[in-house]
Length: 119
Image 1: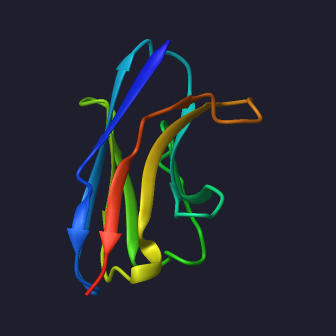
Image 2: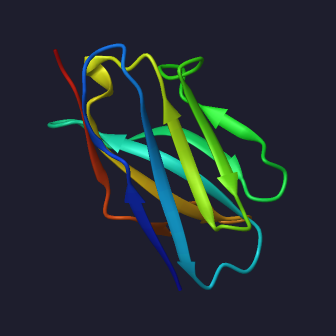
């Protein structure tokens, strides 16, 4: 069983930056993918970015490419999401999640952290 805890959310003006962190605790054996998702009010949760635990291969949603950077520190069991040039449409609750290699779905989720981008 693995537990995920997000932090670093807050309120920022358009064009600003935030850095989200995801702390991983519990059993973390096997190879896995860590992802960030977000959910805006009244909308479905959507994929933001992911990073592979071993290879560090990353993937991004088109809407955040060039503005967001996902990274991980396996020694500290942390995953980060650096968000730059934030836009109002980036507002939402951000979740980190884990998907085991070979699994179809993300099976562990954090509780989320609120990000609000407004003037």
